[in-house]
Image: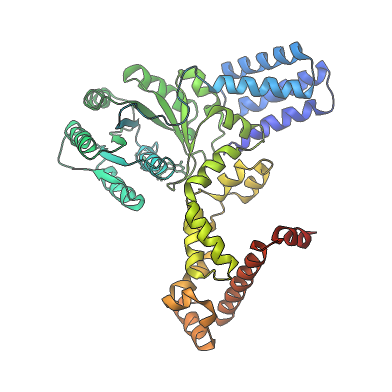
Length: 439
Ligand code: GDP
């Protein structure tokens, strides 16, 4: 997600690794300056960062550790606004009302869905989405699809005025005790007075706790400028940058907080619902310095994995009863963690691996597609008990799934040996056996 920036820091740190004199420090900061500017970080932010890192390192004694510490502290500092909330915070009295604002095409509607999904899945909240983007009528239909996909309630009415629909949404939220109301407001291709007037009116009616400005990271410094305008004219409490998975250089994320004086709260890195990350400065800095972000990963895993379900699954594996239904269930669970690339980026030392994996889509890999096609041709009994699959049944599976008999045989064999291996590993001394095997 921050490939370019992470590389910048890695290269700079490399310059000071083996020498710890002022010359090495100069080289390291020069390298840092060059690559940060290339990554699209605003020049004033770069200047401030470099001079502070130089000063602090010299003060504490030139060396790799002090350089790293100075860099880490300054990065955290420029990404933090004193007293600003970290991640998502809830109003003391529900519902927490959030206005989603932004220009057309920025990803506002998609992000409204992602945020609803995050609050429902990770924070276990009752979420209501209000479709008040009546400027782009397709946005209402888009929200209908998204909310039904993630099973979140929606208030929408193409024939009502935005303020009217907001009032209806708020009333429903009060009456039916929702925790959060997310309001998708109108966008425009560019900032104009009409849009600002409409947003001001909606804001008055909604009395929001949060106003999130959604901006496309690929637009670079334009994202910063428009955020500033929305801050001045409407007032915003946070920024969400989208499309970080594209060829965004990431620099805008580093400078924005200082430039606009509003914290970056979330980052979108993909078109799917789980592709939204909280922007929590010290965790992001850890990721930028190549040290991963185990905390976020653990939170995601804890939210996605139901402990009771995990226990039941372990028991099944131990008894050798892991079947195709379980396999499909586990695949569904995995999807909640987000893309493989983002998971790898959170594991210390796996940053490079994440880059190699690129946009590998586990769900759509040939292997998984084959298994899914095969499983969908199975009878419920066969899914429960793969041992039932004799040659006649296998032929039927091949015909039904469009696979060759050889492919069916191979997939079944692989599945059986994987289930057997899992059973072995889950028994006493399983880990040791696995380690022995890896030797
Ligand atoms: P809106 O006009 O601001 O409501 O924009 P949409 O939500 O319709 O998004 C515009 C396009 O950007 C859609 O095709 C989205 O799928 C895509 N999009 C939104 N967020 C992201 C993201 O984080 N990554 C990528 N790759 N695409 C995104």
